[in-house]
Amino acid sequence: MTEADFLDGYDPNAFPRPSVAVDLVLMTVKEGRLAALLQQRPNHPHKGDWALPGGFVGIEESLDDAAKRLMTTKAGLDEGWIEQLYSFGEPNRDPRMRVISVAYFALLPAAKFNATLAQRPDLVLAPLEVPWAGEVGGQVLALAETARPRILAFDHAEILGLAVKRLRGKLDYSKIGFALLPERFTLGELQGVHEAILGTEFNKPAFRRRMLDRGWIAGTGERQSGAAFRPAELYHLISKERT
Amino acid sequence: MTEADFLDGYDPNAFPRPSVAVDLVLMTVKEGRLAALLQQRPNHPHKGDWALPGGFVGIEESLDDAAKRLMTTKAGLDEGWIEQLYSFGEPNRDPRMRVISVAYFALLPAAKFNATLAQRPDLVLAPLEVPWAGEVGGQVLALAETARPRILAFDHAEILGLAVKRLRGKLDYSKIGFALLPERFTLGELQGVHEAILGTEFNKPAFRRRMLDRGWIAGTGERQSGAAFRPAELYHLISKERT
DNA sequence: CCAAAAGTGTTTTAGTTACACCCATGG
DNA sequence: CCATGGGTGTAACTAAAACACTTTTGG
Image (cartoon, rainbow over all chains, first blue to last red; front, side, top):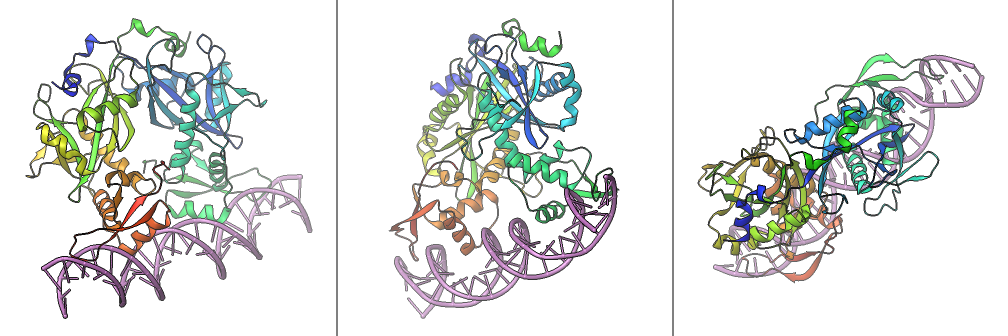
């Protein structure tokens, strides 16, 4: 009998099992900067450090359902974009016990966080300071507004770094960016979201045409009001179907 | 105390834990067609059906190590390209018990399978018949050489479909395709691999230039021998570093 | 010399970028 | 009328594709 056959056939009840958790990277663009929802840990280990919202997966609960449950309990909302990111399973990533964590990554418009943040002082929307040129090993620092770096618990800096990379990678070819905007938005707002996420600036006419030529959005005929300049047309996403 | 706080703080020992397995999608290009390694299940459930090679994750073993262990025990090799694909966690995906499976996807040149396949009659390299135009929900059928469809156990058809999608998506911008070729290869062989994976045909001059302009490969000065036509130059990958 | 695949040069096309400019609004 | 961002047209650039062609081998 080979090792393969042995492992294929063995009874897992006879062996210790890991705990399985879901961690959520909930991101938004706020005031022109990419930000992520962090929770200050009330207990050891890593007491006082900042962590991604997370929780254990119920024994009869699918991974997706666990992630949606976190969306509801931590952000008060289960709309928006959510997708599985990656699974982290180093044996000692949690000092208490073996925990395998399935990371999810989600996006919401910044305005949707207001209600939850007002009630939960342990939660913050931390702007991300990403060393884009010198990024090493997916490391990302989440900075406080005071520029005092927040220390991330466990391997959560690695998870956050991967989420940012995924967001940047999918921004151009998927409809992911629209999850950060309200139902109706201007092309200038759309460009602002792209620039905040990628940390670059775009040529305005080129960006407009690229977006319009895709056929994903259409003008509503309505216009923004109240600004001290020419009011922009409001656009909307024709179909939310994920390309 | 909110549900979030409760779940964040609870003792997982007090609750049942799922088993965690790793399933391996080991693919290659053989005779101009994409193929995956499948194992015929000797026992119930799904006895006689075909399944991806898999095994449980050891309590002190990282996910990556478990995947590499499978590479060794099922394919006899731990070289080549390997990366995590996705985690599958529907509560009833395995009728015996709750199993969360972290799928990995790996690539090897077809020639490396010969030794293992000769010794293991339960393993096959099944050519993939992918309905590219009418692909629905990531479904992929693995066909026997006799065109009798192999039935895949559990949710393995879904896993295989996602692996094919990932391979196709990364083929153009990453060095993933070179994992299916020997150390030294011709541009024609490289084009054949791309055409087999994507199910399309490429214009030869355009493909050559695109590959050479990338700066990833360089000619060795040596040439193929034995063919009944002009011998092609052998190229090699300059650096295996993953872009 | 012929078949077959390797390899090269030139033209065409499509997608993006750059730049210059006009438009509409509040103050 | 002016500052500000919205919006449009045209030219320039670049990467890819299409096509026609030459080269080198075994038989």
